[in-house]
Image (tube, rainbow, N blue to C red; front, side, top):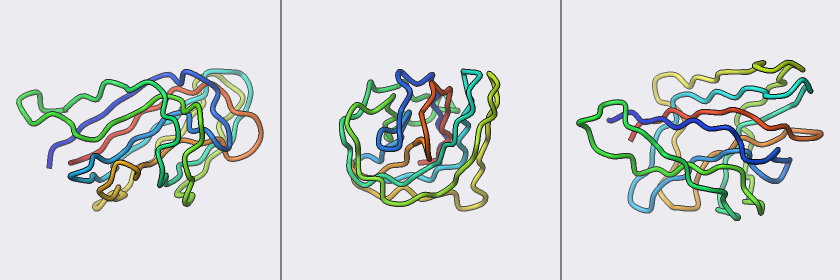
Length: 145
């Protein structure tokens, strides 16, 4: 399997219905999520969660995914910035509170098998505000295909 990653600053604050960032499977293959990092860019605390997504909603701008091995295959999964219309949030995987400080963050790692993102362009994961008001976040995803 090849390893890929993408990182960005959210284009908007996100909400309990709008992911700040997301990663979706392509039509022909899925992937295994290995790590997610999320960091606060404001001095206001925020509760976040990593959730499964089962529809696309209206995804934000596409992000530039990169391969860790430059002579390997290109990435097939697609990452997006802040959604503008909500996807279906199908289940919460992880949750954390980010402190009221710029740079406060969390890094989630997923062990040997990772979190499987099944085949289909409507299947993905997203960083969503768990409760309260969303904040602008810095985030990254690392996955294998």
